[in-house]
Length: 202
Image 1 (cartoon, rainbow, N blue to C red):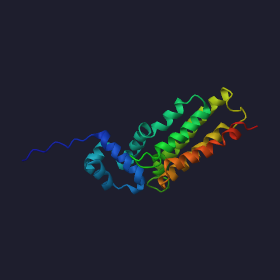
Image 2 (image 1 turned 90 degrees about the vertical axis):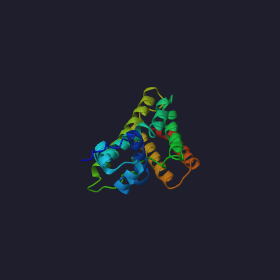
Image 3 (image 1 turned 135 degrees about the horizontal axis):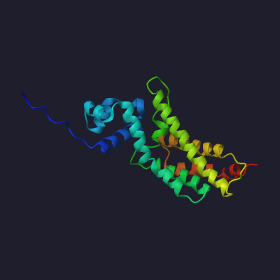
């Protein structure tokens, strides 16, 4: 009886990176198991053994995105000294990150599972929660602007945060449709022109 061969080893992180880029480019539903195994360089048995299922692989890919490609934007936000600087960095870094050229355009969290059906409802709910968490994080930054007097105490920081997150999500769609960095920066500057009226509401 022939000895059973050892399972083929692979770089799990590199495979996850390739899966992330595929989901980012094609969305959850547009990405087949064949697409994944081909891009990751592994068989379906190895994929299931390492990641559990396509759904779990997608969740892990989204988490990896947040820790890698998506982290650039929030790092710029947290590095800013003022609330206005944080929002400016948020949008301007978005313009650069969404059009880098060495990865899919736009944002994986915004674009990868927008439609609801029985197969993707739970995954979409996870992404909705992540987008809401981004809004909460930005509202927290704006709240510090209220505390230091940069923003009026009567301003609705949640409404302001939601406005700028909506702009950023729109920039994601524009990038996917082919808009370049300069175009996205123009959108960002237009949105920033609304800053003063928004933060000095009475």
